Length: 422
Image (cartoon, rainbow, N blue to C red; front, side, top):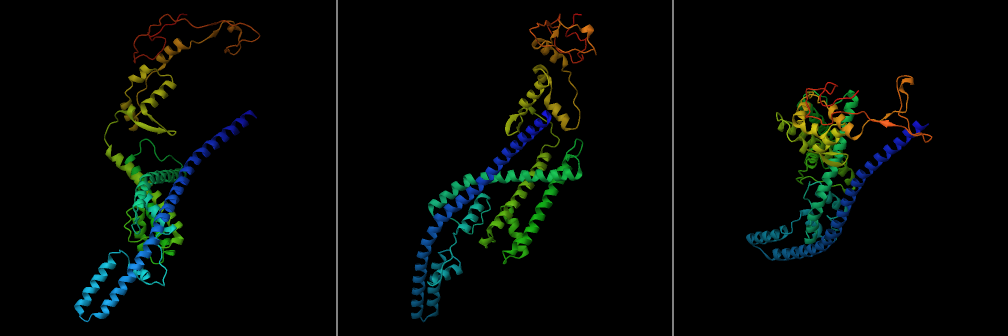
């Protein structure tokens, strides 16, 4: 019953730990989504109001220019003068930096002008800032909104990249776990050629990346009807690699959510592919080099950053090695041999451990026990019961002045480091 309760308590603690870790990651993802929506609301509020006011000004200007042009053209009879006046009119209209469709909608007082800064387009604009895609189909025009864009990107871009890297690492770990389960063996074993293994993992992630683009490009035209398969493929590649030329952008704002999810998943794959390529380049870069300054290397363990020197010292002291032996070991050479698949030479640690043990924690022997009459050849150290006082003694050592450690000795009773008194 006690064992069952202990196992149940351990399971509960493990679930709580997993839930706490998952809650931290989910909090990060939710914060990024809220950050995206908050930025979109600011862009929509500032630029939307400014666009409404600017459209009214543009409409009045276009109508006046068109009326003046028609009035002046009606009076002219010379073709060269008509061409000259037409060129002036076109230059004035082109200075507004708008498409022909937008000009026609603004020039007709009976037509409603389609706003470019809707909340959906603001979400898309915020997304392109955080992902650094930057389609460029819309851009802030007011001074304060341009300032906000710079500040928003300064905080949002690192935040989004951290989130995508976190998701990409989970994705890569999941893929490798599935492969390990299928093959029922460790993916990384000593003695395997590391470069070939790393290249194989790159090829695997690259195939998944290309397959995702091919499949997504076939689905995307289902709601972006004006895109052909090649256009969709081109748009996917430009978006997932964050090139974002802006010649093809999402048009259907009612299908914006699946489009953003598609791009986000693709960015996970892109991050995993880049990370895998970085491992290969790092392996090529350090090929043939010997390990140096192992103790100065910084690693992350359990969410904490520490140096390899501190980690080595903690583990060695835990198993009973003294500081003297820890300092004697050439850790650069030892780690280099371990990475090469070689077994480093063993170091006898018993004499030093025994010396510390004798000085700080001598073994206690219960002298009140009659060991000759004990059964089984074993004994137990008794405790104080019923106010019975026990006599304890420690073995006596003649030589407490230990000489320098000699690696040729093995710590037996012939070792001159210490002598027993029988």
